[in-house]
Amino acid sequence: MQQLFGLIDADSFYVSCERAFQPALEVKPVVVLSNNDGNIVARSRESKALGITMGMPFFKAKPIIEKHNVTWFSSNYTLYGSLSRRVFDTIDRFVPALEHYSIDEGFVHFDPGQHERDAHEIRQTVRQWTGIPVSVGIGSTKVLAKIASTIAKKHPEYGGVVDLSGADADRYLQDFDVSDVWGIGPRYSQFLKSDDEPDAAQPDLWEGAGLSRIRQKLKVETALELKRCPDAWVRKHLTIKGLRLVWELRGISCPPLEVFEQPRKGICCSRSFGRPVTTVEELGEAVAMHAVRGGEKLRRQHLAASHMTVFISTSRFRQNPDEIYSGGASWRLPYPTSYTPVLVAAAQALLKRAYKPDFVYHKAGIFLSDIVADSERQQNVFAGIDDERRTRLMEAVDQINRKHGRYTLRPLAVSDERGWEMRRRNLSPCYTTRLGEVLKVKAC
Amino acid sequence: MGMSAHKLIITTVSKAETGARVSLASYLCCVPAGFPSPASDYVESEIDLNDWLITNKLATYIVRVEGDSMAGEIHSGDRLIVDRSLEPRHGDVVIACLDGEMTVKRLIVEDGRRLLVADNPDYPPIELNGEQELLIWGVVTSSIHRLR
Image (cartoon, rainbow over all chains, first blue to last red; front, side, top):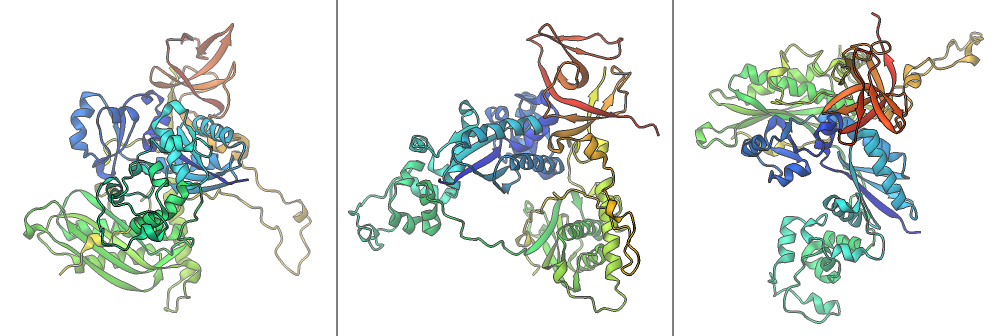
């Protein structure tokens, strides 16, 4: 029997994570802000209805937020990551295969025949165990499953599950805007919806495909119209990627072009400051903190880096060219490493080369590249380096920091992380990962 | 010319740690030439409180109690283990969202009436009628009370 895909997608995931521990916020308007409390990155249905748009700067949304008493949160990625794991580990119990797609979306394979029942059971179980509402879209291809989940989210009256694997799929596709089809970007959707043929001088592919020549460009506004476009036309205007997409709309599953996992190119740790920074000492603390983070990321994945770049820059929004500077410096480390003291020392040395006085800096970061797996790392031939001891020391440090919170143990160069941490003025507790921050319940 | 810093930014998504911590019993005897330990056939893994206290890890949460309305079995400052996958039954201690606040109470079901009762008689029971917004968030399965 034919394979069926499902796309399981959490509804306003960040908002739902906050609500999971504050059920009183259900059906109330809630938003979550980006790093440094800059922009709106998640909105509940109620906040969308108030006219708060995705990506809207916080200060612009403030009047609406205050007028309508919208609850806002700084983003708590620790919490969202933890709940994402719970959600997908729960889903994993119900399906033969699960493929993570993002923090709040995953593709699953369904056993045909009982797919609708399974979908409803997943939805109900995830909601009860984690508090997170999810929508499930079902289709014979991933593109159809994705469309189905979008419809399920938009139309709560369908009960959170939409199945496009049946004969009535076209009924849904004819109402589905082509610009919402997965993979159709704004440029293609503008082209598809327009009337004019951009290059009439092109060789006539229509005839080549055995079709009568049509002078006017196809006007494609819905997913159904796209599905019915001739292959040659799609290939000409939307490339081979577009053709695969159209085939997927027709129910023919096309495995992705890139089947091999891309090797990891680099690790970047950077962040805008919450306040203006001018001195090399302050920048030094910031890059040291990023070096510590970079080391942690490397070790968590059993990797080592042998190339480091440090970069610093002023704000993009400065008008006067004399006030704009962005600089960087790179260095090849003598050997691949994930050892924090080496990374911190390198970052600070590089910073001194990149730094220019008299600028107001807005951002600093490090980039680690030439990354190899620990196992591929060549044995250190440098005298006096006790690799074994360094590894054990870092393991101990990581363990303590995981248990007692980041930066419990840190190099002296990172004097006080609070000044460098993001501006997060309304951060919720890490309910599921820190014993000291668990949900408080009243007994009174 | 300084290099253009913003072009370097490649955001990476780090793989989440999903591995559970598992302690394995080590061999009691590792001298290859020696006599095998008589205990090596009887190796068992050490007691793990997680196994005992947590049935459904994915649905289990820890919460902290504030207040003495459940005094007797549950004290202020105790940690409770809450399983959200369980159906609340008569007599269960539950976490309920009551008028916007998360509270710990005992659920009593009597002649079709649902009551949230405090174990401490100083607090009056709350009868749940249709108008009152009630959400039972989870069922408490254990209370952890540290003595020192």
